[in-house]
Length: 110
Length: 116
Image (cartoon, rainbow over all chains, first blue to last red; front, side, top):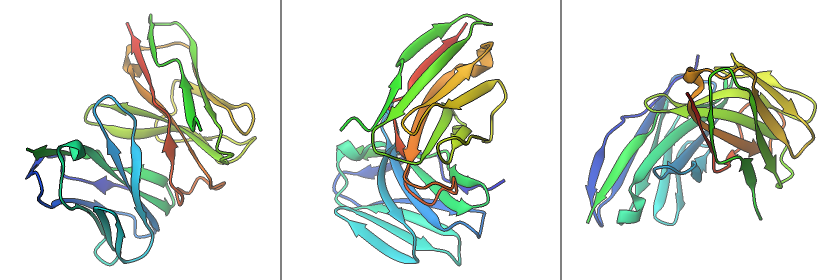
């Protein structure tokens, strides 16, 4: 069974700083990686996806993928209180379809 | 553009009752999924349908049945509800037609189900 591991947190970051969220996955056959943001009581919302090694930037968000280390990260620059949420990492494309981590709870302190 | 629509949003059942959760998507996606989300357990796949006419079990299928009614609609049925099925249920859809998880999934707002 494929596993996606995340630190549950909470991760507390001052407003305006860079928030760094990390994720590791067990299935080397995974090819697609996704970051979702989930506010309390709401549904997961896709914010980034990455398929190739390296960095992918979209506004204040940067996803980083290192397949050799089986490691995915999400950087949030200029963190805002509205970024406070649980961030779910997911890995797909292997034998078990899409597998989600349990999420990291991020708190941006004003 | 509604995306993925789930009904109902909330439901309370008694043990042993049955009910069907409805899901419809208007994005012309091939694949549809049902997840449950429990505190500390994350999102767990119940069933999925990689394309119209096919359904497959996920990680936690026991106690559930599904129907892919057409390309737009994918329903989840609890035949005899148990307290262990108290959860938040999410439906999702994706462009891909393989169920491999290579494409982003888009989620509905969820159904909060309590079984007494």
